[in-house]
Length: 286
Image 1 (cartoon, helix red, strand yellow):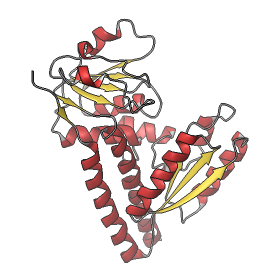
Image 2 (cartoon, rainbow, N blue to C red; image 1 turned 90 degrees about the horizontal axis):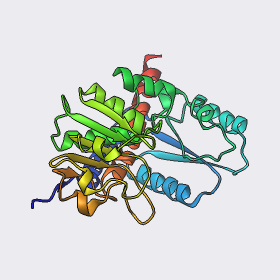
Image 3 (cartoon, rainbow, N blue to C red; image 1 turned 45 degrees about the vertical axis):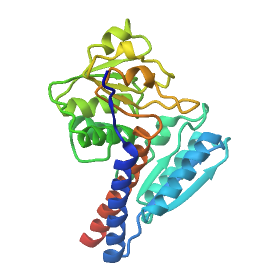
Image 4 (cartoon, rainbow, N blue to C red; image 1 turned 180 degrees about the horizontal axis):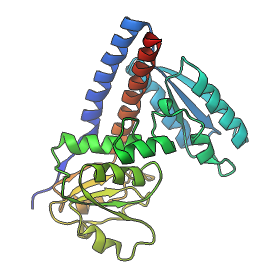
């Protein structure tokens, strides 16, 4: 039996970051503007600390300045909103990333909405979701945007295909469905209350697993020849798809790690440089 071809997000992300670094260097040489990404972390969740450090390292490789704002776990919604508004008003900051989760006592949506749309390089605001949904210029949510880039890289035709998204989070499931819909796929959202999930997934030409439950989808759930995007990441480097059984049925599949994850960070860096270019253009026009 022929196994699925692996979709190498690491290699594609490397090329995107290399191009992003070139653009950043050209922008700095031409205008003196150095792209800057501000990361905001509430508390000291070990996984979040690791993610932020990784993003800072990738920023340096891409010629992007990283400004980190560490806030105590006791930070209130009002204090976090104030910090994000200050960063939004700072002309030397071009992109803002609020690392989530932020704690149950914080109104995460209120915090996201304190980020200026032109600096929402993580694509988490209402404004960004609207532009994604209507196909207007703006920033995409980074993981969904990275997924679309992977599909394009491997020549996956989306128009007319049945796509099933398992998961409905505001920054992954919902926006990736809207991006697929904009490309003329027929999209079905599935979630924890979907009856007979396996039957729904077996109808899919393209499966996006984004629910955060290890090995939820197994090989028998996958339509032969389907494209499988595993956007889950669980303890032990395990995705939402049982890779060993799904690889025997799919035509293309993303590994965990090395599939979607690298694309998320590459998209974040690329959009930060895009935001810096737009800001520099605005300064020149003024």
